[in-house]
Structures are given as structure tokens and as C-alpha cells.
Length: 290
Image (cartoon, rainbow, N blue to C red; front, side):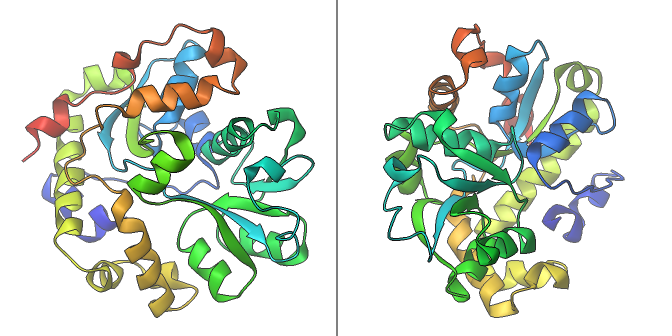
């Protein structure tokens, strides 16, 4: 959205239509079905799809950490002091099979809880996540800013695991976990290199702009309805999230290996599949970006 608002798609001569999905898993389904040419979503889907025989790759790596936060509701706080307490708990995720679902299961497994002992509940993000927390239909859940900022401002929950910074990602997951990316079908990338380069140019220029501007300036460029919890809260949410972004769109060197290790911990298909990490991303376009 920021790339579009800054006019960088138009500058490249691109007509880009942005479509929102409640979770990355739905966006991935649209990509595989050929309904969209690209998805801005978590890189881990490229590994999941390769294990299922689909070749998809990240062409611009927007984030080096998940930017996700595991929130525990005020009601459940006394019973959940770490992911080791996830057993039997209902935990909100954006969608079943989504990256928040993957990461929730990994946090459980890494802390001695079987993935099957956690009950994931698809609650989306934003107001639907907040409502689920208020109603007590989930004991906690994984979400990003600005939802995190809204939850904390309304005193509905507390932060259990914070993966918004490189330090937080390493502590929770054992390394940098490259997340939000522009990923596309490899066959489409190979057949439309000029268009993909233009997209990479637009996104890399946006990342550079973000690194040179304040949270207030970034918020000022975004649609008004993005600040549903109030402008001040939205600015704070952006400030908290900025450390997750790359400045150049390049995949962190150790990132793919960390993602693979995380997914193998609870994902039987990936544990048994031979994954060629080199085919899950490319830096060719971002390194040429102008």
C-alpha cells in the first residue's frame, strides 16, 4: 500500500491492483490458482509449496523478522507464562495453515508442547482478533501491529513473545526468520523478468524511503482507515514494527535455513521432503534495483 501511495508503481509504468485476504494461506491459494500474479506474504509459504510440488520464490524480501507478537489475554495470563503452557489452550491465528499457525506450533514444540496439544483458532487480524480476545473465545494469539498496539492500549492482554526485532526473532526462533516478501510462481517470474524487475525497483525504493523517514511521516502517507485505533496509536505501531524491515529487499544469509529448521520441527511433510532452499528465493532483481 505504501508503494502505491508513494506513486512508485505508477513511476515504473505498472498498474497494480491490491487485494486483501484475511490470511496468507488464502493469498497463497489465489496464487496457485492463477488468480493473482504475486503475493505479499510470509516467505515460509515458498518452502511449504515446494514440499507440495509447487515452485514459488521470494523475489523481494521485505522483512527479516516475523513482526509477530504472541499475546496472552488478561484472563489467561495467570495460566500462561510462556509457550510451555500452551497445552490445551485456544490460540488465535490468522488462518489454519497460515504463517501465524506455523509459528504458534513451533513455539509450542520448541517449549516441550506437542503441536497437536494446541488448539489454533482462525480469528484473522485487526478487529476480529481484538473481538475474540474480548469475548474470551481465545486464550491468546499471534498478531502484528497495529493490532498489538490496540490490544495493549485497551488492556486486553500482555506480550508473551515479541518477534518484531532481530533480537526477539533470534530469542524465540533461534535466528532471523525472513517473513513478509513478494513471492511469485517461478514460471511466471522467468517469463516476465522485465515486469518483476519493475516491481523490485518499486519495492526497494519504498524500503529505502521508509528507512529515511519517521513513523509519523510513514503514517501520513497511509489511508486513514489504517489508523482505526487512533493516529497516535498507529504511529506507535509503525515505530514498533520498523526494525523488522530490510533496507534493500535482500534475503538475510542465514534466514532460509532458520525458516527450514522451524518448519521441520512440527511439519511432517517438510520434515520428510527434500527442500532446495536456493529455489525458494532469488536476489537477482533486488540487487539490480535502481
